[in-house]
Amino acid sequence: MTGNDDHGTPKAPGPTPASPAPSGTTAGSDGQLTVTLRGAWNGDVTDPDREFHGEVAASPHAALPEGKPVRVVFQGTPKRVAEPNVHGTYTLMAGDQAWKLMRLSLPYSRAGGQVHDDTQAAEWEAVLIDR
Image 1 (spheres, rainbow, N blue to C red):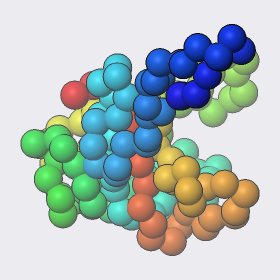
Image 2: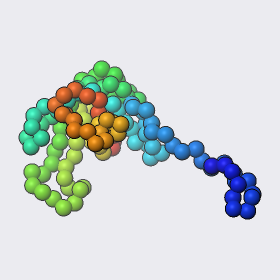
Image 3: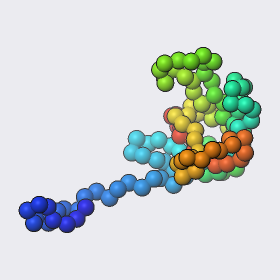
Image 4: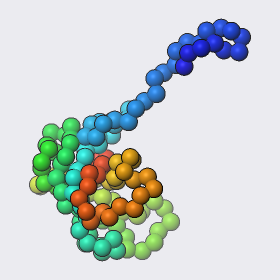
């Protein structure tokens, strides 16, 4: 921010606002790694065996190159729970490797206020907990 304060003294420039990291790049100062996946969920949302199948669309992770086939499963409890940390976890699998996910969601620009059929192929952002 530039300009003058209430006393006419010039203000020093402030920090530049952070812009969202592009898909497939490290996001945030805490080192979270975001990988872009292209694919769709198979099965009904209430099916405990429901899985996401697709491929890596963009990734800075050496073990997850573009085009690599992936799947994501949710492992959790079938009953309602009060605490978010006991709901379950999403796990991204590629070959014989697996990573727990902090989040798997549509990119922010696609998610807002629109109904999305997640059984149709789309790009999803997966934020890895482990590297």
